[in-house]
Image (cartoon, rainbow, N blue to C red; front, top):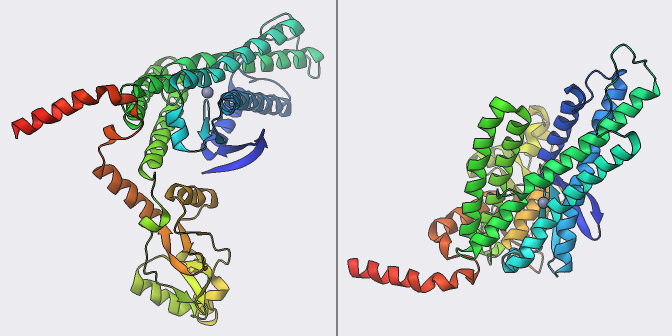
Length: 410
Ligand SMILES: [Zn+2]
């Protein structure tokens, strides 16, 4: 649910759908909040919109700088960064593969985690300092009501000053907030690095995610009584904690699994020449929503129930599957890591991939359901406390003692 907006220093930058919502929400909040925390009352309205959007945009740019600071430092330690995804508060820098993230030395992880908040605090001071240097105040000096003339430069100066103040203050808050030991914020990553010395990486993440969720619920309750901004922040914090926890789980459960291991073999295909009306009956008989389309044994496209929804009853008798199918076949090989296939589905917004072997013959189908079944099966069969790196080695003897005691009991 993310799309790419740019590539900086070889690092692709993605925006998560939720971030767009947050961007608009920020602009809206600036638009309705009074001086000095927003531009409510600024006339003409167009000027108010421009300042509100500009403040949200500038904040978004500083958020990106924050993320880049993490990523560039990580890159300098030889950790490959797959990309940056901007969620709410903070964003996420994706490491090339989960093993890298696990193998980062705790001291380096600490520096990488702190690089972001440090950059935010510096940016915050920079914006506030710039404001002070230019206008002699930290936020626009309030004009005495009645003396405001539309089009007066004073209003423009005041609004520019408020803009600098808002971006500066938000960066300070972002920096300080991110030091709190709440996952997935940076301080929470530090907490996880510390927990990972004692528990497995997966277990450490679980504990950190739970801590993050509990913290955001408390924060939301406090926010409802004292400050709605805080409550809003808590909601997004909760969502990102849950999302991150899910992503880490997926990564772990799909480690060392290939598409061939979990794909559906014996795939039912339809021929290009099948009438759409016959295809409808075919779907009812076979009970799958989507099928690969073949012609002379070669896969030429895919067709799903959605593809024929808009075709009316009469046309269904005239048209064939070839007319309705999607011709861009998104395929993977049986050797492809399952995690890569999962990402391919997300990037292309599809629910199933065609699996083609080296000879371009149909080997199977990989659906989202196949992936989820694999994740659920593996997580129910795996004791997560045993996953992850061997930071926990020194605790092993104690575990074994426990096991021995269990044996004696039984
Ligand atoms: Zn950060």
